[in-house]
Image 1 (cartoon, rainbow, N blue to C red):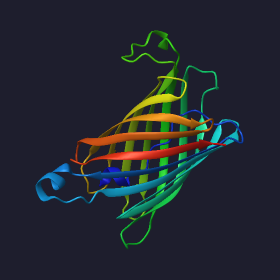
Image 2 (tube, helix red, strand yellow):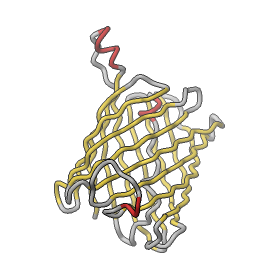
Image 3 (cartoon, rainbow, N blue to C red):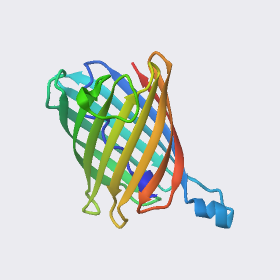
Image 4 (cartoon, rainbow, N blue to C red):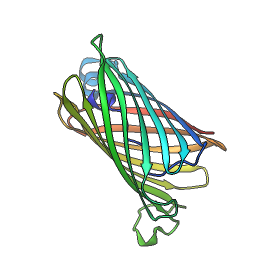
Length: 229
């Protein structure tokens, strides 16, 4: 459940150009498979999220992340500053923001977010980087975020590594590995392999699976839709 509650880290360090708008809507569902096999219970935990970024120019990107599950809901707005020029091989960025989180019918807790990210674009030949799949380019990124709960006075932290490879002009393979820890919960590490398909010039459909490697026994699926304006 902790993995479902976690808002994803910012989508890499690359700054969006002034006026560019990106929107992603995602639905995921997870459940411990032993509940289905041993108890015959099919009650997956569902979580829906909306993520958006808007380019302000001058290396500034405004973002928002809103999520709602069956037991919790949260929302965070942040401003990301990319430290490196657009043509740099390695991209670095920092971000900060404010948000709110509510569990059940309890009171809403304020959140303060601090984050950092690093990424690198991959050309068709990867500049010497060994890859298992033939591809036409891609990217690799590492995002880290710290959320401080003002009411609980405790820290929530998240780290996510992502590798994306363009297999064809319209298909991209994505693999992410995310670690997160919430107050009063064990460390959860989750792997998410997925495929993204360009269904329209500016619209992408992503389908994937996810499973916890430690801290949980849940597995599940995800479906998301990306659009760029």
